[in-house]
Image: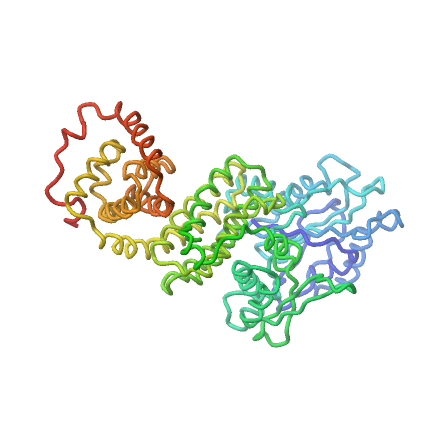
Length: 569
């Protein structure tokens, strides 16, 4: 079931007139009251029934009685209006069932608690098979407002219980922001109908939000942000204070007939100008591609991957402000990836970014300084295009981030975020599966000599005895040997980087342990090789750590295969 509590109004008769009217396209049929605070109130009935307007006026006066008695003490927005709709696949509920649902909702939201004779006056109207509307006036019998704070959250919790009790479709629900609404502003019914008339699968609000988020993911400052919006074809207007300081902005689509303008905050709460300004200033400066190459610094793709690999730890241990910061910047990374990806991946990456928008939202205000490294890498990525290996490596880390976000949402019982994370994973995994084989095959072409491969086999059994046999049979083993050879050529100890890669990420639940090691060693190999003293210490540490695990399976007792593992496939 889905509930919608609209902004409080002040015109009781107008709301009732709409509910008992024929609707915009005669969609209201057999309008009637299914429950109310008083079983003897007049039921106006369908709009064309005799005496309808007279009874409608009587009902409005009865609902407004305490409002008039309260006079100036009555709240300005005294009309509380909530609609409740069953899922399309649910059975048709009876009037008695809808009445029970209405009473549970007004009780749980504090409008009219059970057993409280001083509760607010309310009425539940059914004018279609699949939904009802509850209208109440927010003045109690003692002429005070009801205690209906946080009514939206309480209504959502009660709907979950109602779905279980009535055997109805369970709708995924998640956290809301401090105002009780999702960070993403939903499209109105009029916007949805317009998109349908124009043959578009997204509303203007949804299209604008996607373009604005994509521009934000690439921009390094506000000027570039607005230029990118204009380059994308949007109409952009900014608003300035008398001092000349920028106060806000709004955007409109160029192909939408008469322009309908949306401010950033009307697209999503985190797209307001103050929020965008905070995010753009919270970026750790990284060198350009030319500077990075000249000084042998890691590429921004490797830096981004390293920062993403740390996000699961932050989600498990950091405070809420830091968690929201990491989720926010990771969402920006997803919005930026389609511009760097081959065409065949772009659709899946666009869908992943849009899905993660819901998975990333929490009630906390983001402390963006906590995610400066990843945001800095994100801004630098545009100056250094990724090869297939860099993109596959980042996608591999991204899947881990979304899994961690899904676990965190599940612990907090945020069903909507869990469902959104699951959808994000589907699209990210599809994109990874499209690019990983090509990347691994390109790496495998740089295969080392047989003697080197045999040495890596022995190293693998020394360092990872539990996973060695599995890794030797995987398709990515040739790519792993090539990656180890590349790391060794730059001065790294193969055993050391292999162990470090394995320690950073558990291999037990990996779909392909060898692929995990390839991407991790790719990034580790991008670092400066340790000096002689550090390599000596690494060797000593390795001997200490691997000695207890060798037993009867000592490396010297192992006979390497005559052909390279994995090549028979």
